[in-house]
Amino acid sequence: KILIIGACGQIGSELTYKLREIYGNQNVIASDINYNNLELVNSGTFEIIDAMDYASLKICCEKHNIDTIYLMAAILSATGEKYPMKAWDLNMQSLFHVLNLAKAKAVKKIFWPSSIAVFGPTTPKQDTPQRTVMEPTTVYGITKQVGERWCEYYHEKYDVDVRSLRYPGLISWKTLPGGGTTDYAVEIYHEALKTNSYECFLSEDTELPMMYMDDAIDATIKLMTANPEQVKIRSSYNLSGISFTPKQIANSIRKQLPEFKITYKPDFRQNIANSWPSSINDSNAREDWNWKHNFDLDNITNQMLSNLKSKRTD
Ligand code: VAH
Image (cartoon, rainbow, N blue to C red; front, top):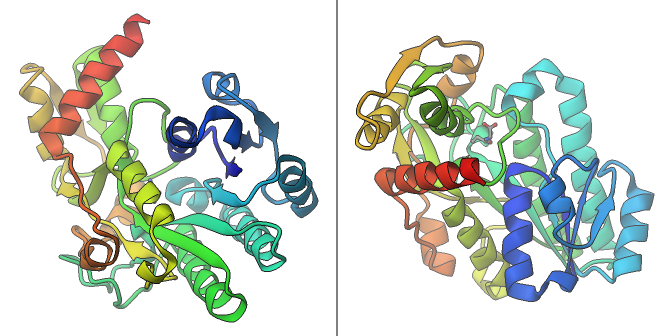
């Protein structure tokens, strides 16, 4: 059975729904630190677990006969800069607990998300390669860089089947993101429908790698169901969808809402965004386990506006 840690979060909730669709509701156990997302909590088996508490993780895995864990709990880039040691403790302790459960053969397979945040200001910004200079300048990015090293170490030394993706900024409508720098690309659609305007915390030409959630979930399932010998990279795979700027997403919205207005008021998150690449080369993922993305910017805008509209009327 599958356990999702951080199931109430932006990615965790979508993974829970998708995995239940594929494997059956009773075979996917959702867990989080609180009941933050009641729709998710009431959608199937749910356990309160503190991802930093090894004993409760171990007990839950035994109780539900878990063989696969998706560790989706983390403190993201913006919040991590406000609480550096909390981000370090949560992001690292939770990873060690899950890796050690696999090392002890208590579970068989692990998914752990990395991020384009592993890259820093000295990384080549365009078409960033799988292997390159990585000097992350955020605590979150440091935890992802170090986490990747530990994943590869546990695979090489203890034969742990851990698999990882460097997610770009993710855009979804089911669950709000929490504390990321790319969250503007979600907020903008909510604001467009509410007030037909948005004050963006990044400057208009800040180009970042982005992806629609359905593509990210599709990549995650593809990676996790690939044969082990196909998974040649055990740190974390680059993953690429599209890249765009706040100006470009605003133009995409205007194709449906012609009066939409955007203003710019960069805050501390501008420095974080400036340290990240603008576009990513994911040829390894495409070669190793035939990944490809489907959603371009206008498709994403269509999906976001139509789903948020119908969600508002519910
Ligand atoms: C963040 N959404 O903004 C996350 C992600 C690439 C960005 O890691 O921190």
